[in-house]
Amino acid sequence: MNKLHIPPLDEQAAKAALEHQKILAKPPLALGKLEPVAIRIAAMTGNPAPRLKDKAIVLFAADHHIADHGLSLTSTDVTYIQTRNFLQGGGTINAFTRNAGARLSVVDVGVNYDFGDLPGLVKRKVMHGANDFSRGPAMTREQAQECLQVGIDMAREEKNKGLDIVAAGEMGIGNTTPSSAIVAVLTGTPVETVTGRGSGVRGEVIRKKIKLIEQGIALNKPDPSDAIDVLAKVGGPEIGAMAGLMLGAASLRVPIVIDGFIAGAAAAIAQGIRPEAAQYFIGSHNSAEPGHKLIMDHIGVTMYMDLGLCLGEGTGAALFFPLLDAATRVLSEMKTLPELDITVPR
Image (cartoon, rainbow, N blue to C red):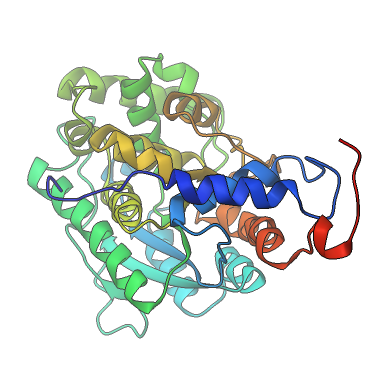
């Protein structure tokens, strides 16, 4: 990762896109927030008229043994059940990627189950679930780095297929627990402030979740100035791989759409490792999890939609893909005022 080069944004491409946008056949700024986001994508890609033809969601699956404390509405078996479901095309993320014209890659980075020769599954297993971080580190530093590398490698593999924009998705029962821990550590916010209902738990279960996170942070003492240390001590395999995908995509000038709470925690890890990677982040939606806005503000990412989503999987990012596609099509497909011979008073 030390050798990973993340290029600066292309200001010339951004300037050319802005100047072209000014003469499009519409009132100035009539497209609101879509106009600046199109300019940002031009800067990221180095193309004044970018097109987002090739879209991908890379979904990383992993388990968390801290969930064995009963912190979710479902058992951890659901991680491998849903992973198989995604490969068969039956999940929400499958419906949303089909709607967006995007492809979905499903990667086993840490599921506590051996799938065998399952068609379509990308096998990159680092461990059989993150360790229970209320009793010790979730991973070793070496395992955390291996998970990051899985994500970087996936970004390169997706780019080799042709990639214009990407988002990281996840499947992991209990993964709002490590995400809450990461957000609490990196923002210095009390655990009870950032911890939400996750899969829909209430009352005593939420109190147990907060207590276990506090216990894990006190025991492991993750260093907020060292994002890999935070990932290793209170994170998880899929969070590390998601962060790696973001780092790898940024190095390739590929815009990265940030999904909800778990993706936000991964983005904060990626930014902590390489701050310049955040230039390539585009927010999608506001998660119902309370820690989401905190971590988005922490890394300086604006979210554009608020649909009350709290599913994960990359679903919010997939919903946002068509809007970004539309925003960039304006730069390449709209007629200009001179082309239509329209004079606008100055």
